[in-house]
Image (cartoon, rainbow, N blue to C red):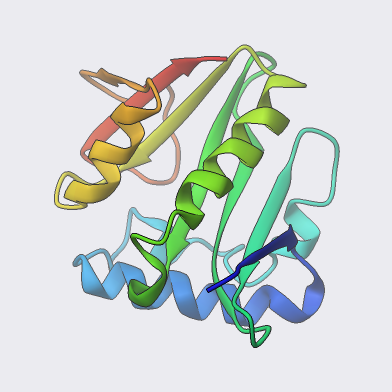
Length: 157
């Protein structure tokens, strides 16, 4: 299966919101303090359409959006890898590696460090982040709206 990665468009907003919600339900993340309650979840084409912010979606061969990843600003020097989710059938195909490379390459243009917040029960995701050199933190780097996350990482870019 060949996948195409492109910048998010307005037509993708509701689709990527549905994918994120589906993944959050899978991992028990359908609650306050996580992306589930993010008021901007269906507005990515607007939110990520400025300097230092980007969101990419993945399409399968039929043009169906199957996942995505974003980079957003936390501080002048630190960005956050945001809302990286893939549908189950897309995991293990290598497309997550392509998304991560695109996101980190973009992040390096604007930031010195990249931060991630996630859940400990997303075991494969946690291994994936460590594989890319993300270092575990004992507490959040900065307070965000995702206070229910229980794992935090940072990486020098």
